[in-house]
Amino acid sequence: MAEGKAGKDSGKTKTVPCSQQAGLQFPVLELTGYASKDLKVKQIMLRHLQLAIRGNKEVSSLTIVGGGVIPCTHKSIIGKKGQLNTV
Image 1: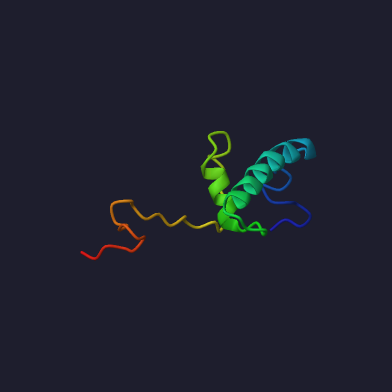
Image 2: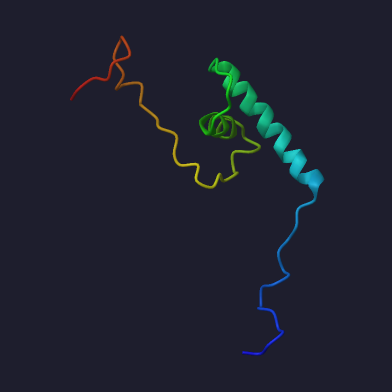
């Protein structure tokens, strides 16, 4: 190995200007706040962030690292009183 030489990929990372980061953070946090208000909670959780992002066409292509999957129960499975029907 040659000493003093950096690897192939060093220095090639793209930096995003602060204005672009703020331009993305504001709409996402605004939508997240609306989602938490709709659910009548005072604390914003990761679920509210997921619901806000997935419900908006503009930011739905974002990927949340460690976000997981939002559980979904089909309406035909839920009974009249909110109980799950057994098969």
